[in-house]
Image 1 (cartoon, rainbow, N blue to C red):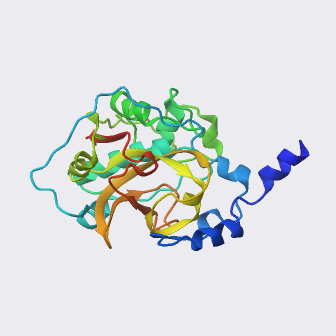
Image 2: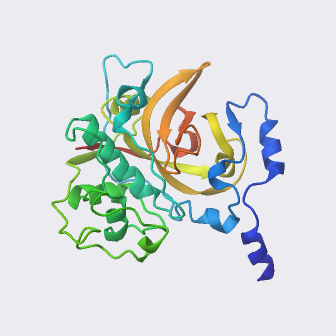
Image 3: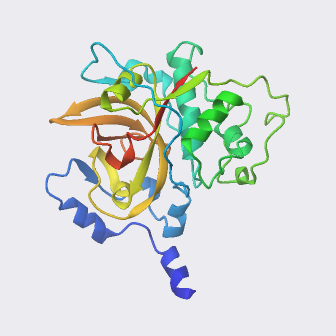
Length: 289
């Protein structure tokens, strides 16, 4: 028992691993110990990932096509004010962050909201009991919740997970005691992971929710185009594809994380495109708002 406890309280990041990563030839990304996770123990890091790995969806895929796709595209440059980086804290709520975040993006991108409105991840965490709150969830279930139940705004039910939000009591009133107004719902959702071109075409319509398998080396990412090179599998994670491009002959996806703006490239990361790197192109949803 003492040995197990000691291992869990050790710092997650290792300078030995960092030096090894720095010496990998032709690495397309820059490794370091991110400020966001400095001092995190092995046990602390367990709260960040989803304990439930993403399983193959039984929802039919839809192939998106476009006559002439641009060689690069990103909502970061097209409509940057429609995007926002959130921080899930020490809670495995990435599944809600990605689903509700993409919904918030796309209502702004489509003009349904004149400016970006942040909708309530906390409401989905507390009320979607098919998924498991801070212990993770599956993206095929959370998009269904967004269609069937919807969510109020974050102004009504603010994010609390990692604190008292772990209690998962589905609120019947807004934080200020007023009645929760009518919920905002996803009209439809489609699994657009049917090859690289299909995802690219879908991204030009709106941001796309997807899952990624996290390996240990990803936790040393600070910038560049990530490719998995080293380390054991850590768990599942949900993120949002916001664009794509190419740099020095390497094709990539622009992806938003939910670890705050102090992580990665101001809260985003790039990852190799067209190779299903870390399962990023396996299951992804475009939400119609």
